[in-house]
Image (cartoon, rainbow, N blue to C red):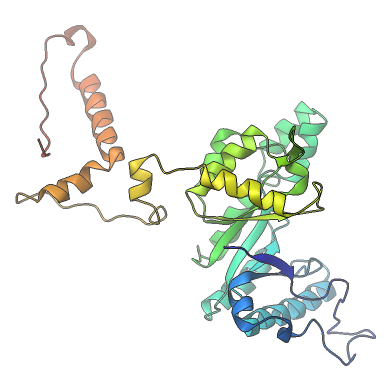
Amino acid sequence: MTSLVSQLFIQGFKREFLSGKSKDRPGAFTRSDLILAGSDWNNLIVGKLSPYINVDSEDPIVRKQSEEALNQELAYASHLGLPAIMFTLRGDNQINLARILHNKMQAGSTYQVWLHLPMESPAVAAAYNYENEEELKELNGGREQNTWEWWNTFRSVCNFEKKLGLALEMTADLPSEEEISRWVGEPIKCLMLSTSLFVTNKKGYPVLLRPHQNLIKSMANLDVQVVVRGAIRHGCSKYYQQYLDHLWQSTSLTDPLVAYARGYEDYLQCPLQPLMDNLESQTYEVFEKDPVKYNEYQRAIYSALLDKIPFEEKEAKVLMIFFPHRK
């Protein structure tokens, strides 16, 4: 599905609710809702909140002004029936924002809330660029510049609200494989790509470097949306879309477990009860598609053998293990 991320309110049109010349200014505060059909608003537009909103500011006037602006924009998003709204998370200390959005979601808002944040914080990326190993070590060791910790704190305050998701910005310098795996386990709704990440191939078309390609392919199985932002650097915007479509189509579900469990990645499964009766062949077939269970059985038995049987007697014991399965 093709979507457009758009600023809800006119950029540069900053409203004033407490004082100032524009407090009583007449006229519309943004574009008319009639410029698009209702079905387009409902399915194609993701609303982006104004960047100047800072409800966690230490300045009480800025904080109160931002709260009024935020409530107005959220009300307008509900009026339009948008499928999702997006805002940028600036750090791990946005508790007031989490409180407001959690209350809105609990009150029955129809839209999802997407948190836009980079895979690597700007400070860590700058340390990489300048090859400052001491600063990089200090930044990686703290929570303040760990964007996953920003996300984890925010969603914890929101009580792990199901309507809360991630709009994850792919950075030029990707984090470690362990950190990428941690991100993949989160509810990513959208992957943000800057046009500056694309390089030009021999034919003059935009392509991504191999690490970024692999990351996108790993996200394809999660059915996330991709948003390309930034200045057009390769003549036409459709070239980016065609290239990403090619990457998406080249990612096939070769793993039968991934194909079978698609759509249930984030759902906990109830444990099975001990078997009392003979089951149908198809039921056993379902059990056999869970390799994790049998790998854990093997690891547990191996650990038990190491614990119970001394190394010098390892050839003196024969252990037979039987599982119910199909022949």
